[in-house]
Length: 220
Image: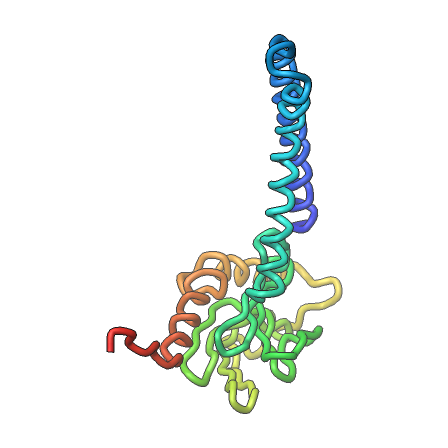
């Protein structure tokens, strides 16, 4: 649904821009047509196509921006339903369809299980203290939230026991209890101050930035 919403937003903006360019082109055409004898037909033609050329340049600039973001900056351009960003240590933090937060090691792809070799999914809160990622995630086996620690050196994952040890696994399709628990967890992922979507990402980046060697003093 998020991808369709983004597509429709871009389509509507593009259509409105095209209509606006057409109106502006018509206005410029009639404005310069009256003085065609003085300014010449070339001026009339250039004035008429100028709005469409400007619109074309916006499109070209947008494509360049997307390519730079994805290929050079290694991060989502902001229009994707699956946003992600690459951290200074090579790990990637992202969200599948804006509802399934994850991080994974360089060269690793996430899979169906919420935990796998080199990745963790279903994130809620996230923090980093070299060399550990720590936070909370939703556990579909018990329909509860649990804490975890991930060692970036060994890529080992350790989770605490959930508060509700006798929790019921989410079925297929999930029952109402599971849906309610997942909705609550997703709300925390959207609103917590240390959510992986909000301050959690900034805190992780700040912690990693401290590990980078300082730049040499050019005044020396």
